[in-house]
Length: 485
Image (cartoon, rainbow, N blue to C red; front, top):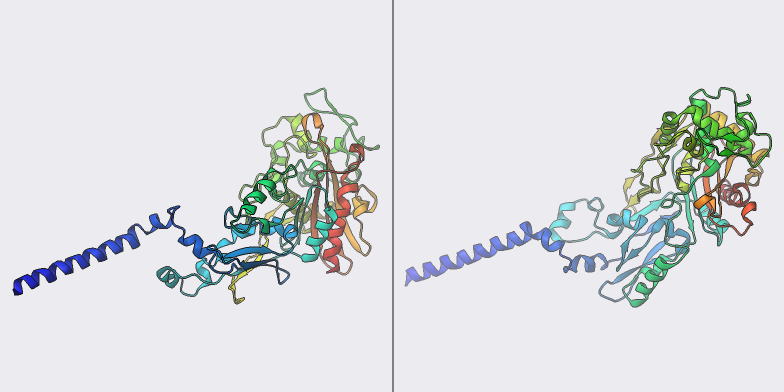
């Protein structure tokens, strides 16, 4: 009888051991398989089982959470949704996340290990920390000014603090309310279809995800290349620039919109935007130096994130001299995001140094304790400080008496460059109006803000569209908002 009891006890012990081995196999070996199984809804339920952390602008939350009482309990809400949509993106139970909601999802959802002092404890207990917060670099007044100034027009604004790279405004119009995509009911699906099917593409972030021909604003890059290469040593000396200018190896003749461009000095050509002068300078500088200079400003960089991805701005590196001439005036295949052109003008304002643009100041726990901060660093030296000084002078001339007078601000020094970019088959599209600028208060040692504005459509007649007329007033509104702060 005792022998049978011993056998039964051994068999039970074996069954217990097998159960433990199988449990360990499920918990350790196959855990990832079960976790990643699309049919496993536990993570999604847990994800929305607590309020999401907030995105803050100027110390004020522009996001929130609402208890829906459904299985996916907490839905995302947005304050001033269309105003901040290019920054926040959306957090949808159905369609996932975008922009800051996606890039900082771990912090906001409470899954980032840095939110807890003992990350392993959460892994063992399957617990989740309360959602943390993301503190942005945005200036609320500048953001509102940009959004209001663009109004109903399609376009975008990017504004930076030149000395730090902090993004002060990031606006894209038309916009949308991200709150329409929160929840799981049929209305969410209809909103998604409507927004994605809209002809004016409200969900496109034109400030960082759309590239445009930069037109004459790119002449800042060409001027920097000519000065740094020594092709131009005296900005007031005449250049060898016929008007019209015949593109090399072609019968096509490039002309200007203004008089006085024949053999004009760099200063005059910059102030009045002479295409012929800059096309010739680009060819004289040469493809290698132009390509290098564009890269120093940030063109052809596919790694830029702020923290979400920024579409690369491009300068074609395989062109003949005729194409190089057109590229040097911001046409042909040259393309730039508004953020990239804000980086260009910020480099001029910051002694030639391009600071890394960033949108997140710091992240915190739900209680406000700092988890991480974004360091300020130099991304590249785009030009020599001496060249930056000359460009600042020329940009100031543009606003004082050239094509950018609409950007002038009383009591401040403002530098700018206008641009009207052609596009479409045989340039048949309505031109894009550009303006890039920086502003420095009279009592300040350094410029406080650098801005890039692009306006896609205009109510004006095609011939009346210009960067100085359509985009400069928008830039002025943003600069005034920052200076008033």
